[in-house]
Length: 213
Length: 215
Image (cartoon, rainbow over all chains, first blue to last red; front, side, top):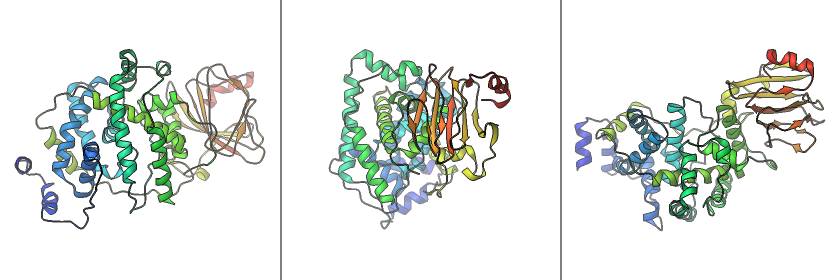
C-alpha cells in the first residue's frame, strides 16, 4: 500500500497506532451508519480519524482540504512559504481536535474554515483570538444522525447557492471572508443564502445542552 | 455558563465580522463571551461560519508541497494528544476568564471615582476592553462616544434613558450616543466594556482625570 510505504519511508511513529487498528482493535471502533454516504463522506472521515486514528482517512481529508486551506491563507495575505507551513499546522489541528467536530452543527469544510481562520489571525495578523466556550458533551453523547444528514445537505446547498449568487454579491461575500472588507462594508452584505442552517444548528445546540444536563 | 432570557443580542454585522476574523481583539473578546452565554447568537455565528466553509470549498485549490503530508504527520507526532477535558465551573465565561486570570471575587479592581471600579483587560492603540464594577444605584458618569462601545452585562443590570440590560445582554453604541447608564438598585453591576476610542466624559473633572484613569 502506497501510504504505508510512505510512512515506513519516513520511519514514522504513528505506524504502531495504525497497525493496532489493522490488527483488529475493534472494541473502541464505533460504527457510523449514515443514510447518505456521499454527502457525509468528510464528516465520516473525520470520525475515523477521531476514533481509529485512521491515517488513510486523514490522507483523504488532507488531499482535499490542504490545497484549499493554502489558497485561503494566500488570499488572506500569507506568502507561499508561510501559507504552506500554516496549512500543515491547520491540518495537524484537524487531527488533534477531531473529537471536537460536531457534524450536527458544522460540515467538515465549515469546521476546517474556523481552524484556518484562527490560524490566519494568530500567524498572519499576530492577534489573539478569543473563542467562545467549547461545548463539551457527555461521554456517550451521539449527535442525532438525521440532524447530521440534514445539516450536511443544507451546507451542500449553501455551497451551490453561493456559486449561483449574482457576481457582485458573491465577490463581496468572498472579500469579507478573505479579509478585504472593513466593518462598515461588511454591513452592506444582505440576502446570504443561508437557508435553514441557523435553525438546524439551534436545534442541535438544544439537544447538546440537554445531553449536558 | 448560560444565561436565560437574554433580550439584547449581537448584530449580524458584528457576528459576521467576527466569523470572518475581522474584529479587533477587544471586540472579539466581548463577542466570544456573549456567545458563551447565548445559544441564539452561537447558532447565528455558526451559520455564518458555514458561509466561510462554503467559500473555502469553492476556492481554486493551491498546489501543496510534495512532502506536506508527511510533514503534517510529523507535526501531529510532535504534539501530545489533546484529551477532551471539561473545564471546571467558573464564575466567568471561559474566554473572559482567560483574560481576567482569576475568579470574579479576586479581581484587583482599581477605583475610578464615585464607587465605580475597573479592571483593564485589553489596551491596544485602537481598542480597549475593561471590566467595570458599578455599585447598585450608581450612575456611570455621563459620557458620549467618539467611536463604538460595546457593553456586555455579566452580573446585575443597568438601565439608561432607552432600555434595561440584564446578564448576557449586549448594548452597542456608536459615535452619536449620549447616555447615562445607571446600575439597577438591587445589585452591583459588573460588565465588560469595549471601546474603540477613549470614552469622552462630559464633565471637566473627568476630562482632567481621563489620561490617568485610562477611561
